[in-house]
Image (tube, rainbow, N blue to C red; front, side, top):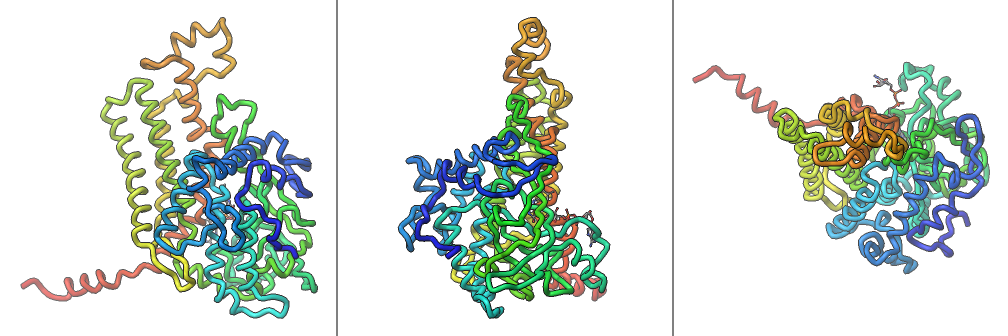
Length: 494
Ligand SMILES: Cc1cc2nc3c(=O)[nH]c(=O)nc-3n(C[C@H](O)[C@H](O)[C@H](O)COP(=O)(O)OP(=O)(O)OC[C@H]3O[C@@H](n4cnc5c(N)ncnc54)[C@H](O)[C@@H]3O)c2cc1C
């Protein structure tokens, strides 16, 4: 049985994670196939960081905060997979997400903690998902079994939602759409007794080359399809025959961990996924030919996807603010009114975000599916896509040219040069080495290829911010205030 859990070992360990990536996966980078992602320099920093954090789940310090005992198997499982049935459970999940993000400095858009809530959300919708009938399987049962499989094995998942960026002028209502989709978008080409055979591509999936599985579905942009063969949702192991991942240029710069303290550890990679007649077994299919359950979710406002992203954003903003403050101190500009005001603006963003997190926790509610959801997060993804760019800009403005002009590790080690560096490149009360390391951290947040990739991620990861703004407007009920305004302007002044 493919989704058998009898030999599952619960919360992942670092060693098990690394071993799980040494399979038959087809990963391509810069024109060459990567035979083993766990030893290739483009991936090792990230793989070993994840392994390190996975191992924390088994330490005395973190075990109670990061794991729970599975009622079904007695395995100790990751809190990322805990089904939240009470406010207490939500608090426990928040703390677990905080730990993942503190440990990774808010740099991971796709930590293992991110995708677990997606699958929990599907679990919570099992009845609606199961209401779509198929002669080969029960989609509702598939979702429940898949949730258990992921939980008991603590799998690292990513997701792939969008179509390849080939021709966005073709709109769903356009009759030509099906023809374009035939060429590029993922679709069913055949049904067999074992499962569906799918063809096409997805742009894109963060961390796919180092994940165990990819959850494949449709984003809000692509959910309305002219042709039912393009309506599908499933999960697929990364080593499935016919599935190929093409990586982007690495931003890890492993050779320079002094100069790239974040990039060297947290380049999670992004990959195009090509599906060349891939078999998806029936027990891994969650939705087929009918998007009703997905449309219900997209319109339902159920926010299981919450803590991982919210805590990441909080940690990332706190990090940028603290680095900017330390830089302002290190070059003696913190007392200047303009600089202090900019730091105050950064703290404002951190604080507003923190209060919003408390707000969604305060407004948590019990769903029809029997699980607790965080309260409404409407607008929060839009707020952050615009605020992130502003935070990066403020960090750049406070750091000045030091953002780019710092000695390298080898410059510092050169005795001939060192005396110039000690004299001309030191800071206010700090030596050149401290100052250089601090500014290189800022550079990795706001200027390096790693920093730029992070910023692009923050802008797009919640979907097109403009589409989100428009959807927010359309769903936003202003009737109470517009009614009062009409009343106000309907009568002449007394
Ligand atoms: C670093 C990074 C990591 C990502 N990771 C993942 C991941 O793990 N999984 C995943 O599924 N996705 C991921 N994404 C994809 C992300 O969700 C998309 O980038 C986002 O939804 C925008 O889609 P697009 O990139 O195809 O841009 P496009 O849709 O091609 O947009 C390009 C431009 O055209 C405009 N545009 C497009 N269509 C229209 C229209 N109909 N009307 C008006 N304007 C339009 C857009 O506003 C934009 O300005 C990632 C993206 C990035 C950059």
